[in-house]
Length: 178
Length: 221
Image (cartoon, rainbow over all chains, first blue to last red; front, side, top):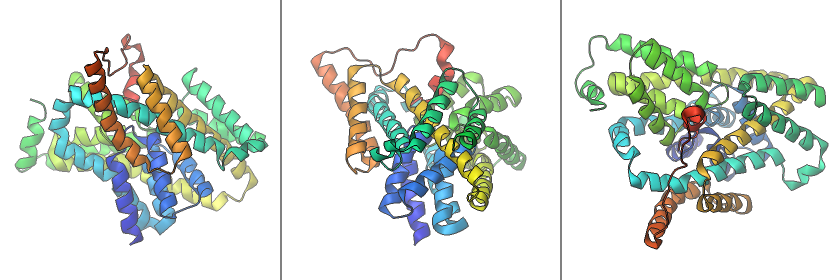
C-alpha cells in the first residue's frame, strides 16, 4: 500500500515536472507532508543529500525518500514513478512533440508556465535557506549557511565553477565554520 | 520525416543488431550519468558529444531540436534526452535501454551516499561538512532560479505571474501541481487577451548572439 502510494505520487509528479529537477522540490515536499512521509527537517537533509549526488535532484530525491519510507522496494517504486512519465511521453508523443514544439499554442502556454516554474524554484530556494521559518534568521548557523549559499551562487554564475568543486569546497567550508 | 526509422523499428521486429544496439545505448548513457554533478543540464554537452560526435547516431541539427524538446517536455532533461535518443535509434526497447542506462548509476550512487551518511552522520566533522553542503544546495537552487528567471521573466506580465506564484506558495498550502496546470492555461489566456487589446505579443525572450546558448538550453521551457 505504501509502495503504491509512493509510486502513484511520484508518477503524478513526473507527469507535470516541467522545468526538471529544482522546480519539482516543492511538489515532492507537498506530498511528503500530506502523506506524512517525513518531517520538514529530515526532508531538507534528504534533498541536500540528493543534491550532492550526480544526476537530477528530483530523481535522486525520489530514490532517497522512497528508501527512507519503505526500504529498497520503496526506492525502486519511487524512482520508477518519477522516470516512467518521461519514457511514456517520449514513446507515445515523440513525433507529436516535434510538430507541436514551434506552434503558437505551445509558445503561449509556456509563456505562462515559465514564470510559474521560476516561482517554484525561488520558493524551493527560500524554503531551503530558511529551514524552520523566519525564526531561523535568529540563528548564526542559518546566516553562515546562507553565506555559503551566496558564495556558491557567485562561484557558479560569475566564475563558472564546476558544481562538484563547489560542493566539495562547501563541505570544507562547513568543517571550518561549524 | 523525423522518427520514421524509429517507427518502423517499433512496429516490426528489431533488426538483427538489436541486442548490440541496446547494449550500446545502455552503455553510452550509463557512462554519462555518474559524471553529471549539478543536475540535468550538465548532461547535455556530454550527451551531444557521445551521440553526435563520437557515434554519429544523430545529426547536430536534429540533436538541437531533440534537446530543446527534451528540455520543454515534463521530466528531467537528461532522462528525456536519453529516452528520445534511445527511441530514435531502436524504438521502444531502445528508449528503455537508454533510460535504464542513465538512471541506474545515479540510483546506486545515491544509495552509497545515503549509506555513508547514515553510518557517519553522528560524527561532528561529517555533520559540519553536511551543513556546508546544505549551503551549497541552497546556492545551486538559487542559481537555477536565477537562470530560469533570466530567460523567462522578460516583461511585466511574466514578472507579475512569477511573483504571484511565489506568494501563493509562501502563504498558502496549495498543491503546486495546480499552479503548474494553471500556468499552462494562464499563458493561453493572457496571450488571447493581449491579442484582443492589440498589444505587442512576445512569448519568448529575444535571443542575443549564440553566446549564451548553454544556459538557454538548461532552462528551455
